Image (cartoon, rainbow over all chains, first blue to last red; front, side):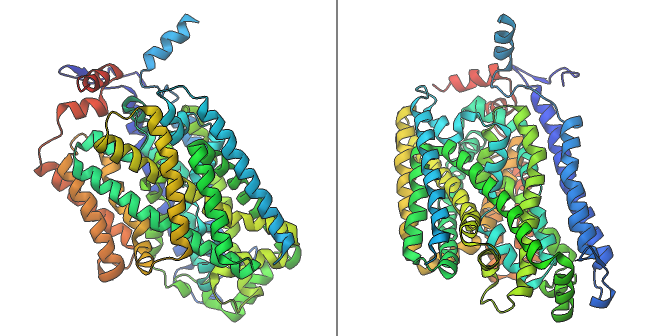
Length: 107
Length: 498
């Protein structure tokens, strides 16, 4: 954040925090797409259209269900931690972030 | 009646009253001018834990705890995969609305989604459509939650239906009216913890009595092999499952009682932690309770309805008092969804309709008091409707959640992130999304292309939005400043109106 100068228009300036938010929107949407495609894709590759005697059992569950819903489901619960930790930016959410910084500096 | 089951439920209600009373105290201590923001969005001060549970518990209704296990009971493992689409719901709500939504709400001092629409689209038609959609659909949905929950509890505990509705709807009405958002959010946290502990304890008990999933799955494989398959008994296609991921996961962003939670957190630290804790907790809820459907199928193959799977298993596997405590989980799910909906409907009536159109001079403190009165009245209306549900209601329930999502999703996100979006785009996409959804659900299923109708409705809504954005005039510069400008510029244009 703050690497690029904020976009200005005639008579007003864009809040530089919004460009951070735009980027995080795209990352979140991308996560949903990947989660959906990978989970459903793996379930179908392993189990789609198979008969009962072709379905393997892992730990008491149908194999397709075990790998897609349980294992990948668990894996995709961990991914958000790394997304947020490395790709998301901490910043003030106050209407006027400068006011808060000034107060902090005065203390 | 089973008293050992009823007593823990009663203790739970007493805790909810306590929370309502505490939040009411906090509200009275709030300074004038901030009272309605305190009542409707908890003073924008939620930490991560309350934030995460209030999103999840408000989103996870009777569907997760009763409906989904019921579908799994009837149609097998495919439904568990489909419902897992809701695991990242909190991540999606917070990440897609994003920090921009939280900042905008502060700059514009907005406490409802409709207020955001009013500032963005400047049109009574948009405000009217949004308000009407929220009031009608959420009201019928609340009634359906209570009637569904009460019928099931009546079946398993023997408590009369009327008593159940009066007690539970009455309690929700009281603590929501007095305690507002903070009471909702904190009780959601208690309710969420009950659901979480409930899931874990129930599973421990199930494993102790049946010894793992192996025998269950083997038994199912012999008696109903189609439950293990994909497409399976549910006749799923890949696209059907995809559409459920959209419905249960993505759509959470656009449900007004969840959207409003995107304005309620304290800072980015709370938001970030809620974003990565949310999916873990939701996955535990979802897997914990949906797999119950499979176990129940083997142990109680002759249930009258799949919806009885969760409560029956709870009562049969666990000793009395523990069963009572666990039956609180589906109840908590219902109550935590309804309380957040009451507040959203109440804020729509008070802030978007009354203060905006009827009496703009209403002071903030008065709006907060009115909020209490309206919330209490709504609670009573829901209670009365639930006691004797009118016939047309079941018809409206079909459209409620999907209809709201199809209406709000596109204009909400496009309004926040796309400068080109304008009034015409919003009107077309809201009306088009809703109409297409209703057609696809009820009259012309072919329009859904074999998926849940939400997906095609969203596509139509998005196409209409883009069309409207390029055909209609672009938004006024003042609107762009409000939604993209710095605090200084926003204050300047807002003050020019006073």
